Image (cartoon, rainbow, N blue to C red; front, side, top):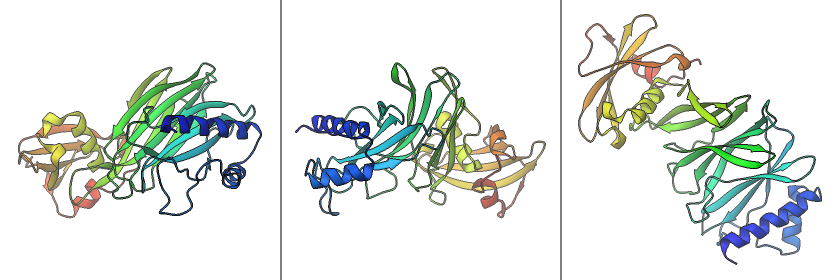
Length: 310
């Protein structure tokens, strides 16, 4: 069968079993026993079209949902394609099909984390975090998305590709009017490969707005700020090197961080103010060091990579 047709028929089979109130373990037993689908039995048996056992996922903020993780192999080794089918726990009707991207011709993704919560409007908001399926590296690309589910079906609110490292501590939390993604964003430095990034969004109707904090460390804040303002350090996306870190005092307290581009050798001094993650802001960007700031080698770790209180 063509892959898209195989996936469609498999989803329809799962729908009927959920309607019959069967658990994922019962469905796995049935598919193996009746040879309805080719189920993976070993690390070497991962041919295109082979399925992994179904997995039930907990949706912390939406106990009224049943979530079934479906994995179908697209190629050998770790090239698996994951979808999450969401069902109303009472009616057993499928209310949404979550995937990193809709097009089956794209790179297959695995789901890292998801959460959902019913909003005051009665609709569900779902946040999910995905990674490109691959066993050879932790730097294959990630993607976040937000969906709204209502009586008219589901609709996409936001999707965004991320420069992130897979560390298996990724998290999504959905609250009333808010979706938060926690992941390990790339920094671009050989000493600090990645750090804790927060993609915190306010959801008002179908409008999504990013809010502070954007990172839990100053290194993460600076990396995210440079992605939005690449002209501040030409060539930063090809890698950076840290220079001197200095304490500048003031109220709120601020720190000056020297950063060099590996590609262009451009150098700038970034002054970041704030002692809490939600208060961090770029106070100044200068071509030269502020002589009023006190440099110290012991400031490097505490200033750049020590997680801050929110």
